[in-house]
Length: 85
Length: 376
Figure (cartoon, each protein chain N blue to C red):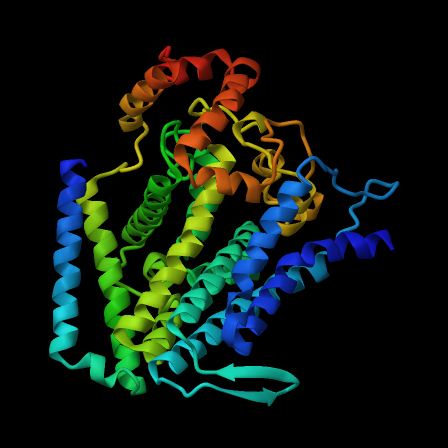
């Protein structure tokens, strides 16, 4: 795993855990059937998701889907499939 | 009669989606209906893989498709997919409330109240599989410049993927088969990794698109004019519904699973459509830059989304007018191929002959050079 991917996952996990802890501290898990609570929780969750995506975009850089990193993998696969048994 | 047949044959998904909803509402083991139907489709698709039909036109070259009818169906599918989520939320509500098991009759339907954990899992998978199929309508409508585009955004937002509508039209169609397109999978990448990279890549495109657009207009990124933010806000009703019905554990877990399945199906379609294909930057998109899947069941079920070669060259063409243009073709349907993609070593082995064929018969000299750069 790339270092930047690991860092992104770590930051995303920390941010999500922080929000989960905050929701728990406010007893959100006991009030979700009240409409205003449900709407507020929904808003908090979608904002959390947007922040998570932004963290990933910022940390992981411009092209996390770059083809180059598959070159090595493909080479070893080709080598493997062409190996004579 | 022919006109009726041509228009009715694309109603497989609407009919099966409604049956899935009825299964969820009926409760008991019927909640697995969506999973069983999906399996049945895979069997039919595999059994009919050798039947390939052309698009139908009358003697004057006019299509039999009725635009008003087909668009009406696609718009109605938004309502169907909302109903699917409501039906699932109702079962989650019963599960969390530990509703006693009993049978009641309502509107001619025998309904089993109460749900076991196993059946709740079945209900979530059923709903996820058919919510994911909603992509085909989100995709088709994304190519509409009027209200259809907005409906596409709403359909995709039910799966938390509203960014798709912009990224598909303004990135995927322009950067197809090039490294700049996250939806095109390079050789060697498996479908699971592709699902995340393509999802995040398209999300990033939508993010950057709005960032530069709002900057040009002198507006703040954090505003309701931001269509990346708006897209996520369209998903808010789904989140509120599932949180209200099932709370922060069961409700949220069910919604995340539903979104995961739906997005996996979306990205699997992208994966199968362009895996390993290469285009030189700046050169026109041609038939050879997409894999066709046009066996009869795939064609009717997926409203001709498998006619990728024609679709990518004539992006504004209605799905019922897309035809076989003799592009590279897997020769099997999407369901059969989807099952193969689930096992990456099997998929790579299956694709070897197709990619060798593409490299030798379809690729240009420049495309072969690019292939070599990546070690293909």
